[in-house]
Length: 143
Image 1: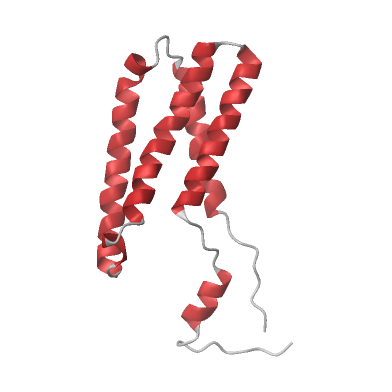
Image 2: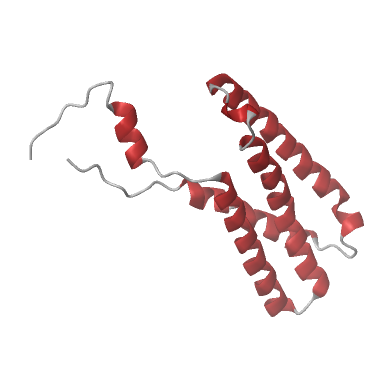
């Protein structure tokens, strides 16, 4: 098998062809799916509305802030140049974290009879979507 030397000019093109393109909206959609599955499993396992609502709220603690982040990153300001894109990412990430903390703080008022373990289970399961989205692609470079 011949060895091809990659020059510096071709490297970005090869990297883009190998790298998967994943929209933040796709991640949010996957999180919604995991949240729905977690809620169905919680209802099936317990038949308890409070536990199921707690799982749903836990998923929403991840999904709603992720929606804010996705919206912020898909705006015009984030696409001006690399510096504004990085700045926008950090700003919207801070908004996401603050929204998550706020939602956790008001959880007992929003969900009457909140089950903290069930809510945290919904939150943790929905958060795991990030790991699925970041898994390496199995694409190969073709000569």
